[in-house]
Length: 185
Image 1 (tube, one colour):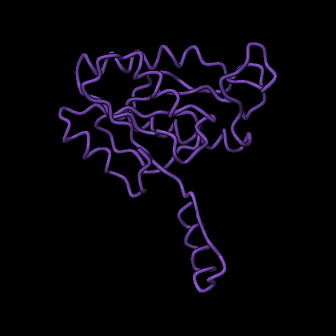
Image 2 (cartoon, rainbow, N blue to C red):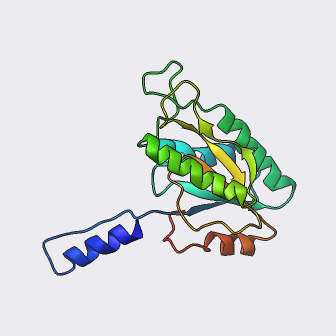
């Protein structure tokens, strides 16, 4: 968290022998505009959002697409590809795409944050939830549309992707920059 980073920066600020590099969360955008191949975009977006079960601060958290048919095609392709992903233990058959969250408690917190966005008006494109017959740390990927609703500027450390539809490229850049976090985009 940012607070943890500030703590360590203060603790080591006067020690020239300590080199401090921190990864402190993210709410990273993936802006897609004028894309000719929705399937190719889906592969990139799914890889960025869901690899490592979404547990990297550099994972895409927000997908920003144009309003209308082009954005719809991209979202449909991402949803279809996410339906094919297998989440499970490393030794599963078929081989899983990704594994569990760090703990059952982390999964519970992530699902709660996702539900809060849904309760605030997010449209569910692909629902998450526990992976059937597996311990509580395994969750399915989610894709939600948060266009036009106020959602917290917080990282959901899980395989969750929030879609934002915008009318212009300038609006896409504005939406991408609408975060207090530094960007990995």
